[in-house]
Picture 1 (cartoon, rainbow, N blue to C red):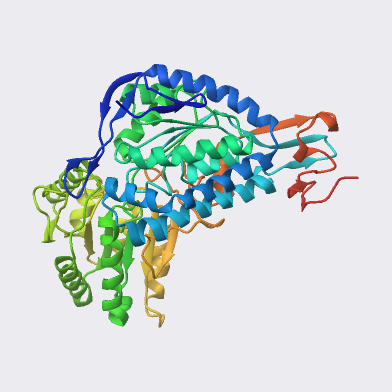
Picture 2: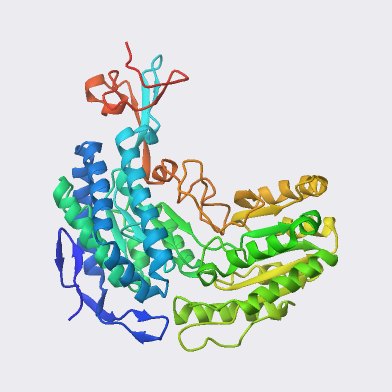
Length: 524
């Protein structure tokens, strides 16, 4: 019998359109536990329940949401070992340090940061123009559908990650669509979220879960008029199909889709600290078998002996490092296909590039190279994301050609420039960094891009196709909450009829923009 879904405040059997099993990517064998592919009837019932929950949440104080997020974080920590063991079996990631010591603490930290933002209320940007008697703020947008990815089962999970935390903190119920790679991990999270909701007075349908849908039902879900917004992290092809459906219906859709995260390494930096940069690149590219959305997938260098030594030593490191485990057979097939696209577009293999995925979903660490001129002839193909343990080095003839390469880059989550500490690369930096800045959400200097801190200043977004909208971030509180708010304006509305954050007395204590000045004070 299949595991139940969580809909309308109860765990119940799904209205099945089929079933599936998770697979251990280290062995390729199916794991215990059968999970349902839900029919549209499950989604329809969940959306009805979510609509009622959305209305209930608007009437509850923000403290209720904050208490839920804090309690949920506590309950997650109480099941740390079980969650880490389960996720390890479904992803191939090590229990320690990856899951138990890094990703789980990050997950509970962002839940607690979201709780603090809900309590504070300043995320909603209450704005008051007393002379014109106009007031506005961001209010809950309505039920939010969250589609989790395969590579971060905790920190980006559909019922545990940043999108989930932000949507709840902003006052919206969540309908979570789990990822097929780790359904048991998602179920464990949902169990604790549901209990935390009951214990803190949240609506029983504030958190709901389905494990898998047909493509057509997924598109129907994000375009349903009852949905306030959807958040998606995953592959570009599926994400764009969902985005088209949501756009056609006028439903907000926030998507993280694809990024190759270009890293420009200038000659002075290589002369100064070549081995250190090689080590940093290798560690970043191969960490987690390269399955990070911020993996350095393109390295841009200038012709010269330093660049050749960089490529040679990086190849040595790639050859010596273990290949690691890919998340699924599908990830392996896509990686092989992407590498084939690079070769057909003119790239040459330096190391790796096996033609197929071995048993246990593993592929040789792969480094390829291509000239700047060849890249400029086939930029679309050579920017194909190779999600996994692979990277492409582009060797430009000179600074002018490097600038042309940067100019044709698609939008990315991150971009980085390594330069000499003694100042010898300053003119090159000044010529190239402004061009790179236009193509990335986060610009780094002298460090690889894989780390994404949960900081209020973080931008984990960027120009298309990195994300669907360059003005929003999926990581960084309170900014991430604003994706799930609707701007509501009150014109001449009497004080006692206003939302608390817009009343003269400011009972919430939020920071407010009053007549051009930020203040937490009451209005006389």
